[in-house]
Image 1 (cartoon, rainbow over the protein chains, first blue to last red):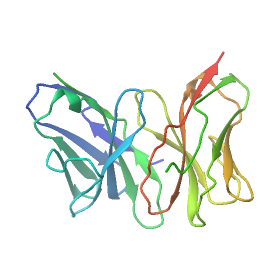
Image 2 (image 1 turned 120 degrees about the horizontal axis):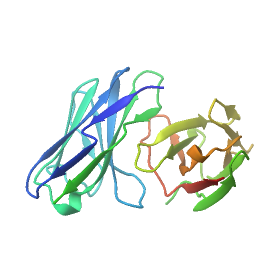
Image 3 (image 1 turned 90 degrees about the vertical axis):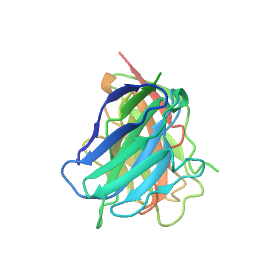
Length: 116
Length: 109
């Protein structure tokens, strides 16, 4: 299957700082990428959808100015958590979907963010 | 409204078949049934999907009822590494993947 990577796998940052998480599709071109967040013992919650070269579409209740998403190429999307606070501590997971007749989504391994 | 209903948890003995049910009584004609699983602290893993015919791959089999209102994911010989949360999701091809609460499968020795 297709491979999606995330970097970093774990990050600890101080409250008020910004953190950037990268998501890469390694062996296919991802026309669409998705960002999810997962709190302990809960399911994944979709945060936003991004298409290459256009602005991301955010789900209701997700602050677009706080969670900046850039999908500048067909293999890379980034999520920047700005002015992070302890309540932003979570497991952030990206997924990627190719174009054409391929509709399956492939997920990255996730990034564990801890804000102190 | 939830599109699918799954049991909260299930147990299965190692080596036996694990049969995970999913109800999706409001499924539309253009919606597929997808199954993903998430092993603890990892990203979800695609398992299988189908429209109306039964499907089988190297990981599992998917049995969809004729009226498409329910389905069953079958892991033919469960191993300890199959312990995970299994998500049944119905969606049309271009829709977003929205996760419900899933079934927590515990495989025991």
